[in-house]
Amino acid sequence: MKQSVKTHKKARLLIPRVGLAMKNDFFLESLWLTSMVIEARLRSLIAKNDRMHPGAGFTFEQCLKRMKFLLLKHQETPLSKHIPVELIDEIRAWKNQRNLVMKAIESAHVSRKRIKVLAEEGILLMERMNEAYKNYKTDWKRSLLSIPFNADPNQ
Image 1 (cartoon, rainbow, N blue to C red):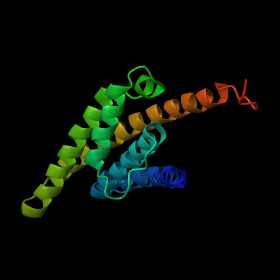
Image 2 (cartoon, rainbow, N blue to C red):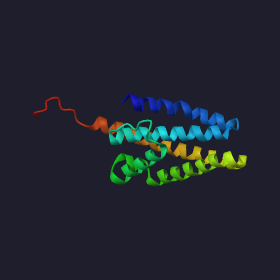
Image 3 (tube, rainbow, N blue to C red):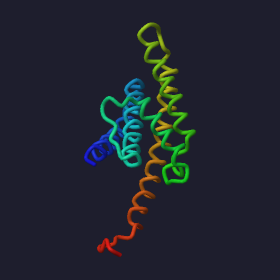
Image 4 (cartoon, helix red, strand yellow):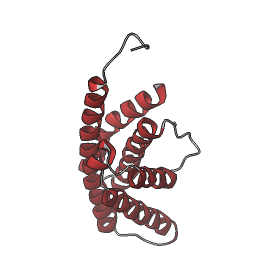
């Protein structure tokens, strides 16, 4: 449980930094911060639904694969109600574009406009992921409250 609390706090603290990076035209920083927020949300969702805590060796791509697996395996759950598979696919496509840009920076010039557009797309995906995460979390907490507590296990 401690891991998901740390992850949640980390994501919450990074969100304002994403906006600040965009405001100051630090688009590369915005890309990485956005990735970190989305990955933190994915890790938290995996921990809540899969009863496992993805460790440091669990990459962003592995988080996306595991999340998609969970969504397809459990189609009638609050998780699939709030987080569409299409969102995971869009995040994967964005991540792949981000990786291409980062590799291209080393060898050739990548236009500022391309990086800015990619950062803006990432922020939109992050906002959608955050909204879905909040809605899911609200439903998840309600479901925990609706489980009847029986003090006597013999009943």
